[in-house]
Figure 1 (cartoon, one colour):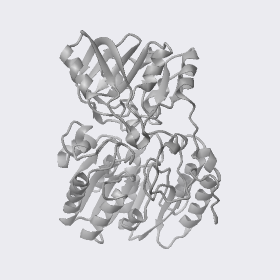
Figure 2 (cartoon, one colour):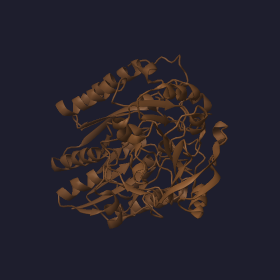
Figure 3 (cartoon, helix red, strand yellow):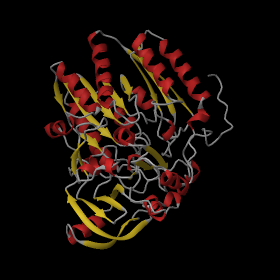
Figure 4 (cartoon, helix red, strand yellow):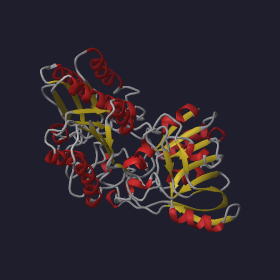
Length: 499
């Protein structure tokens, strides 16, 4: 039997000024374009990605696995049409050659220049060339679900964690469900509902309430009933598209109707707690002052406004500037995206002193933000190739490529500056460059939730800092034109009937 397995991963922040060309889908692994075939397998097969879980399930069945593309790009602005069409063509051409099943590791929040629903459009195109082929899809917890996704595949399963430490397991669940149904001639029925809710991402995690027992109930239903899969999708709110939502989806044999009742129960719980999904950030200056008064270390300071994991540039240094103004010392910070500064420091040479400006190269017209950098003098402490393998629980086993990277020592802080954007959820971004996070008083990273996977175990305290950026939790900054309204919390007075 023959199986097509592919990855197309991008979380699109439509307010981000950063473009997403085809090259972006290979840059994180040091490739100039998205890998395919044996190269893709060598990069992702031993990692905590849904792609790897799907591959393992298919191989365990002795299937011939065809990998037309494994495309992953760090979150940014809308995907270029040329890049999207290339990825879709690779997948559709492979399916067109004939196969017994299709397994897809997708995101669920991709927006392109021409399509509000990248994943739904890909699935529609696959159905055009192979109307009956069985398709299983693994989706990110931040999916904005659409009818096109549901109507054009047989099985959908979503991550149950945030930080996403179960991506591999999600891929296995999706693939196993599909093959179980094929083996037993079971026709699946997917039921779903989307709530008009924009949850704040800092309040979404299933690790804690208000989401925890909603997700627990969904998992319990899968473990103890005939429901095959049940997914809660917190949604991705930083997209100006009609289908932003919190959604619930079930997969079950077509003759069953348990999913309908479960969806109603889970949606009622989420809607009843809608105010608990609101996050109100405190002023950045106050957050840094709180960190300054703490007396056990290290203190992790998470700048969640400029996070590449949600489309930020990671080059705004407002938070670091404030830390220096408040005279915090023994800081390690980064990774900061500034290819120009990296080139200047490498030209200066390791061990030498240089005065230059770091960061502040990216402005965000959509929210009226002007990039904020800092001018400083320091020593080029270490130059690296920016490569390290993730050992923490999220994306375990993946080799990250930050591009050429430099540790710049300015006295109060040691700053990792790099050529590629990356959300720091593994201490390897520091340790590969000779920095020990456990020996610092303050660790400044740009992340919202994923940093907890690798840094929470070593942190004495965690302080959230609302730095400026396109990942802000203040939705009032964003000029939403295409949302279906009313939507909570933009319309706080909403009452939803028939829960």
